[in-house]
Length: 459
Image 1 (cartoon, rainbow, N blue to C red):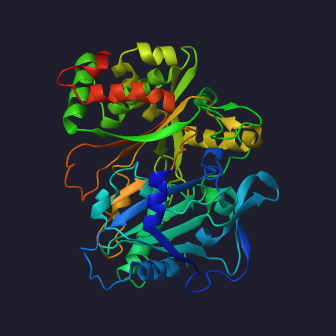
Image 2 (spheres, rainbow, N blue to C red):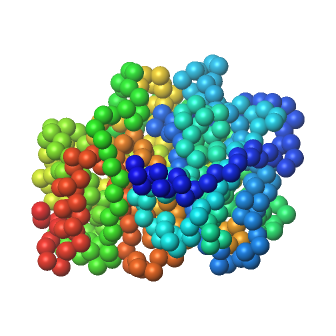
Image 3 (cartoon, rainbow, N blue to C red):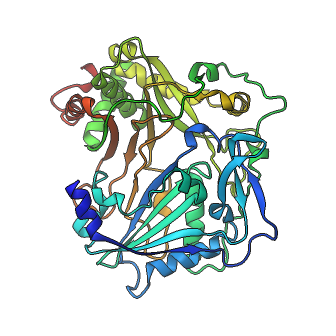
């Protein structure tokens, strides 16, 4: 609490402006439908993240707040749904739609910090309490009224942080990056955006008529529990902790798994399998309990009617690996890594269409992936670092979300800050985990970092 208070004292929020589109984007007020991926109950949340920029690549006379507010205003002529309001559909109250009306805008908070980015290690520490003060944190109702809220915090060195709180029903990470890249393009002097945005969400990713579930995997992965809310699982108190994984440790892990199996694994498959087992073992989950490894797969080029490049809605579906806790702990890690590898081939046009149709058939019935879901996502190659407002790309991109893919204990693979002088190889693993599991999980991650002395795949 003391660290949190000190962080609040270092950040001063001066005002909040509502940024309107530079010219009216429509003539009449109207509603916009969302796709059945947008209205997935697991996406009924606000996702928060930040980008940190240094002042070395641009003249210090530029005011980041002015640059951001001006480019935002012009970008909203095409991305105006970000200024709209989310509300229940009159004909289907369980689902959300967007209400677009004259006079709407995106709140933009102006703030300043009394320290330099260098003094806080360019926010390369995901556990830093300062990060929480750099991103808006709307409650559930405010998140619906203002599904996009931004904050620009200028540091004493001239660098700045752009914090974003965006409701996940509007877009995923790729859709958000499309929006921010359009803003950045205008900020660098372009007179128009290259991207031509596409809505048509209900047509492109809506249900079939009649809806049908032909993929048997859907019933294997999902179940119905009336009255159950996403992220309502009670696991007790949780904590976020960052672990550093070096390239040498990853190489040793992958080589060990390859020698045992004769297969080659990606970092996501190998490290994901290792961390998943370590989390489940450390959490003391009952052996017969079903546990799930969950991750998102981009389906923009999977569906037969390809999604246009200007589509900025949610374009991913969840994929799962399921087994009992006992199976996960007792089987060799390479077998789990192989299951993760094979699961990627489960994604097809039929899987996507069945997933959408399942949402249509059972939306009000409490769709859930169940308990003990471990959500994994790899932010190292998502394109978040391409957003350049004139100061170069961000040196740090950091998620603050604590819920992901139905999991209250998500795991992020994150790149180090490009401004970091200490960490030039490997990457960070940001884990949210129940307090009771942390000591044993720390031991497992320590064992991974000493692979020259131990083989972590045989513990």
